[in-house]
Length: 134
Image 1: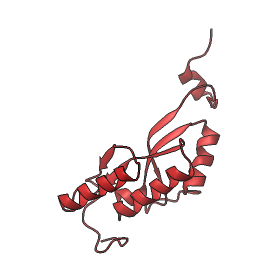
Image 2 (image 1 turned 90 degrees about the vertical axis):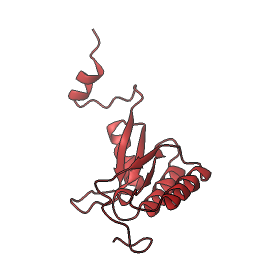
Image 3 (image 1 turned 180 degrees about the horizontal axis):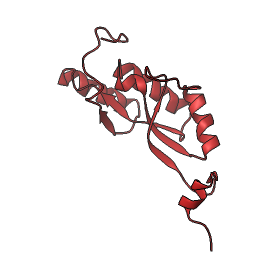
């Protein structure tokens, strides 16, 4: 009898014969702990080692200091690694509705998918200037 996917994964087997999509991934540095090789190339290297085909991702930058810069970062990563990194658009609900709608529309024009994340608990205030934490 063939082993289940769960049992194979528990044994540490890389499941190359299965389609594996991680639907919640983050990339880039994080203030609270060290993440080695946290750029797009490093992420894809980790995906390859773990046998993961695709991630749906937003950079840590999106959920903290600058959602627009983070959206740019994941868009560039998706362009560099098509099919491996799929961006989801992140917005900060502390910003005016017009800015949020403009960001979502901009990302859609750039070809990013329609998934949008609101991360209220980490986005406690607005950035003072684009690219600068508040």
